Length: 459
Image (cartoon, rainbow, N blue to C red; front, side):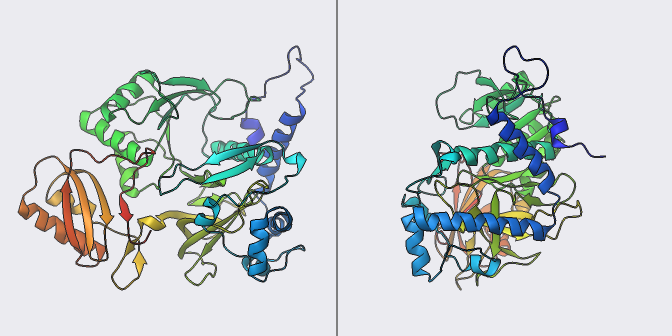
């Protein structure tokens, strides 16, 4: 019999002097009750889950039509009458919310139900342009924390593990990094049994590795591009991280090349998830099967083709997501500008929808001269036939030119460039003009994130 989430979780801190019977406060009781419910609803049939999603979406849309003038105007302009129960056809007639509209700052409720608690602000990193601010409630936070528990449980992370997190810090860190507790549970209700150490991604890769050797973590959390660089350094220098038990990539799309590099260096499981600052936890890797399960209790995810119709299993489309419980900034049919492939129902028995893979962002798509777009293959696996490339980034500058930024172990010759250009053109499927820029290192963006392909055309 499989363990249940509540058996895996550590017990919350008890009020001073309370030993027995087990007593918790109202806020803790609500959080634990929600976690128990999520442990049950994941096994509901897909039809039952969608029925309850639409019931919650109906309440959200009716609220937005009254309390969010921006949404009310859009609903009227689209000729949509709201207020009653929605079926899926009616829901899909609601207008899609663009990122630029969210950036306007108008998607904010004038009044928020008191029971939803305090309001705070989430801000996106701005790695793909202007940052986005979203107001969120304490009620939204309960779902965020409960889904974090589900994600950790699915990934089989031990709450006692020491986590090392390498990210861009909000404020300068001391050389040894920062220390804390609670990475696994979050919130003051959890015992301090989940130690964490945090280091800046601005450190050189070699210094990051030295820090990891000293800290000896069981869990490593960072951007995939940085994890790939750490893995390649460890492999090249013969450096082992014997304490490491799992890797958790965040903030960027995870590529097969990065997974291969981490496996070669460390040989530990990689557990990915899909989330955003605007919507929180969206999908997590299935603990028993392939692909990612959508957290249907919190978000309603649509994968749409070019005509706006739902994609079928095996098809790739743009993601349009509705956050079901944030009444402060209701994100209704929000086009997040990511693309995904729909998966078949999972053999694990969970009714939660399946995303086979997160493909990438709109700005990471190659645009061909005929106006069509597709996900680029650059031929990187063949570069070693010509020259050893340590790091690469491609930028589509126009419909006819691609800039190849490369870091190599030696100076390239004109013959090298000609051979590489041929490989790149074959892989991209068009004889683009390839302009080479040879660099000592390719820096990440100001947010610390890194993208291997950027299109200044598709964006």
